[in-house]
Image (cartoon, rainbow, N blue to C red; front, side, top):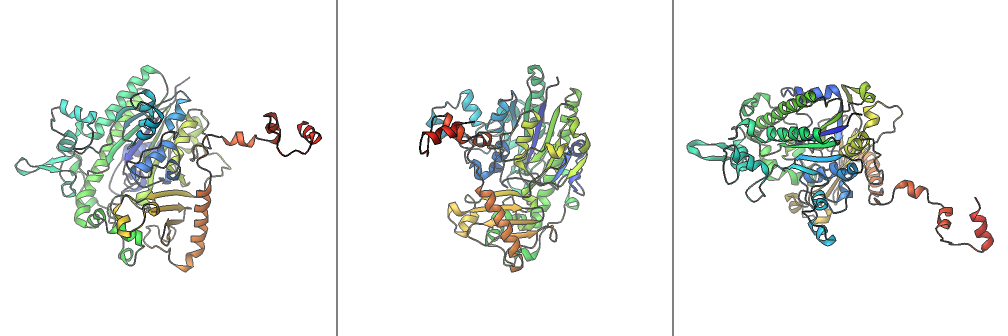
Length: 535
């Protein structure tokens, strides 16, 4: 019997529309497009939070942010929160990491329970259920812990106090001056490191190294290859730094109307430094060609990786999922970064290749089903012939869509959340920490955003696909706001923390089973009790 494996590729901050298979007019990504030709390309896939840490914790647990509680970067995932690795371990599957997770362990919880962080259990908890073949979050300024990639660069002769920062994410300036890749003005310059030693090819080689070793091991694996690009610093090595220029930049999606009397929360984010800078054409002209170059490099490395799998005859037994943790505004809607719910931020590319014969009818197709990031975890479990625990995992396995099953009762809404308590917007607005929350519900047409303490935002993507007109204050849209608010309330009231008791055990609980346990409650006399005990 052929061993099944999963290759789960995630990019960091990759917009859904910066791939040729998703319609970018200039950026050609033939290797990612080839995945879409072999699988299903989803066009309405949404993350559960548009910020790295919270989004990834949802991917890795299969649970909404309001369930796992790791609301922002650096917020620990509480000890005891089940992860994909916990579910796969019961199926005998190795859950392996190469790249980024941005997982912050609950060290206080481990101390409370007497768990040694260096023990096998402690490592599993600290690494979000992953076996860390190579952990690198791709953000290594001077105060960050050193990573193996730094040692690799030193071995290659690129010695420095911080090789990541001084070689991989810096450029050479005049008179030998070092130009920091953190600064947007240097995005048009080539990184100092040669391309073959930059982060994306390095992580691809590490993934291939693991796969080669795993062939000898023989156990099934789920490999999470988590690229740390095209996330900032926006700097890319030769020749990718010069592949694109201003002629390849898509005009920004924004209008002056968005700046006239905007929603207070939206206005606060537009006022942030990163948004003010990305609203300048000069910044976009420097950054976006580099962003495209980083994506092109990823696509080329996907080609290297796919050829490697083909040579080892692993393509017919390996499910491949390609996605991103969120998008990037890049100046759209007068914003930078990824902090609100416009599609360029909260919608992500998602391509799933299921090699099973049952998926043959859907190869090369496009699905407009409403899909959430938390759907991947149960999909992987089901691919390994496991049964996802519905009282723990809040996502839905994608196999009914991948296998073109008929009569499927699919979801009507997708949900996403954002905790902006750590952002300057909270201070601008003066909102309390516990009220700095945003909630999005989208039904495929109407996108409703509940902002605690403020009026809602509302976008009609049928008549306004670019999301330029917030009609949340329009009385004519009160009915839509009310309907979607009710959907959000129903979602928020669903039980999401009863993870120790399966639904089936509750459903099987009857008066007879209570009596069998010796509990006799509410009976008048022995005759009534005897009658209840009769089959």
